[in-house]
Image (cartoon, rainbow, N blue to C red; front, side, top):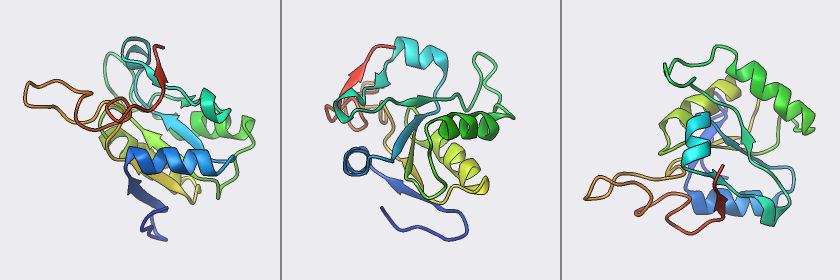
Amino acid sequence: MGAQSDETATDEVDVATAWKGLKANSRSQLVDVRTRAEWTYVGIPDLGPLGKRTVLVEWQTFPDQSVDPRFAERLASELKALDVQLDDDLFFICRSGSRSLAAASAMASAGYRACHNVTEGFEGPLDDERHRGSLLGWKAIGLPWQQG
């Protein structure tokens, strides 16, 4: 997908590139690492048009926001159930790109060799009025999503 280091097996892509990768490769997966509250109240990427579903595994628990020490184990189990291989493209998304980068790095350390952080995230950065979802990100560019 993008420039990738053999050491970390992660790179960064924008949401349009992630969508193209998900569309082009039937084995690729989107992993949303936000909290259950975010999935429920903000929404989730809808991969139905691609014949897929978004894999939902929290990186941090809500409400205390501590990193789930079993994240890699839990996600690996979900991926195994989907018959995901270590070389399959995994696109990691969160609100705006920082939690997903940490999650992608964790899975690269667990042996997955094609981990991509979606830099703009689901909602993107804050605009001039301090609102998300209008500048960049999954929702802002009009990719399909649904209320969780």
